[in-house]
Image 1 (spheres, rainbow, N blue to C red):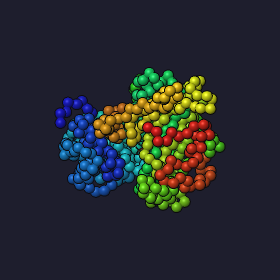
Image 2: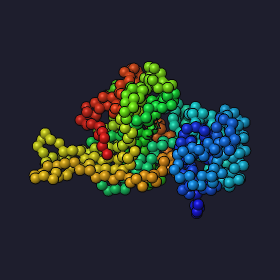
Image 3: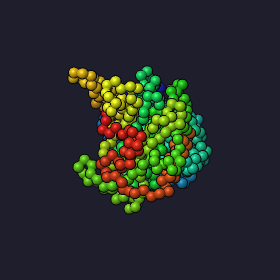
Image 4: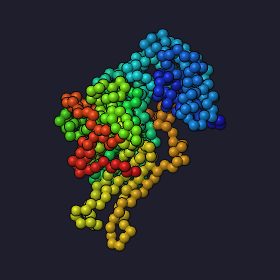
Length: 494
Ligand code: BG6
């Protein structure tokens, strides 16, 4: 490897290092960064877990999961020399002392300049305890930077999020906290901003004068898998809407920032999220739909209903699907619905944005009963990655009739092979200290306020669940949500 970098040395301490996220995402991403020469040689990674493991045992586990997730494992042995393990009981102060000794030792050995990044990939009930002990033990008292990377869920409502935030802020300043929303690490989500602000043709139309509605979908084929325990207390509203869905809305709706500096971008996002129209309880019924999957068929295979899943109550009222109409109270967006939709066990995996434009002011081509097709801008985030524009063109027959035409850009197979995982982008950003693609506390405050209002209204009456078979596009009410406004979900469009 030819390392001519000026990267940043750091000690990366991962709490929850034997867990699923670490094995599937964090270690493979760190390895890939290392292999691509995007990580300094002066790096040490300490995995923290409850179990008593030797460094060799741990390295063997990490190596196996990297081999399972990364195609090209060149330089893997070299990378493994940077990986260490520390058994730690999160509630035991003495354990942190041992971690401090190891950290100081690695700092000397790898010349890390005292830079420390703590990654909490663990159950959220430990977030506060760990940060308190990190400070009390002296681990955060360091000559270099200290940063905290924290996974979701950040609280279960505004009140608990506030309490957690206060606790964490005892040990880390806001600018040292990197709250992960992995959707913000996806290349095509990052591309929303680039498309909007680097092309002259979209921004002049990007308002309530020309756009009739915007649809944001994240549908999954997978069910709840082995996460029933967590999901029962969360459900689609808190698991997906409070974070990923509203973050995408913020990127679509924000004003152009004055620069690409993280503070400038985040302050525009905060403004939009503060303008979300928080629903009154009686409005929730007409603007939000909840659903839960029943048994059904996906790709010819029978699958069980949510209530039959492991660690799920037989009479569970947890929603696995949410569709909602989100309004933004500001000049640009007054009157334009943002429809959001997310669910498990749906027909296909698809993360997509559809921007639907208003009709031209006068239809020259048809008499009054016939409509021209809507112009659409489709942003495909996953699994397809690209953009398409749907226009009307002339039909190749005598006379003047229109037909839909589509201009598409989709990432080539070769580009796709080089696409990095969202976690790789995010890990790289937090090592650089770039917080742009992380959630600021002010954003969280607004999204929780919005989501709490929906949840409180839902708590007042029991849903009739299950209400959609697995393998479908969700409950019927989700379609009525749009048809009442004269719109439809743009299904199966690319
Ligand atoms: C996570 C949720 O944040 O996002 C999961 O907790 C969900 O329930 C996942 O499956 C979806 O992520 P992606 O990147 O596959 O769309």
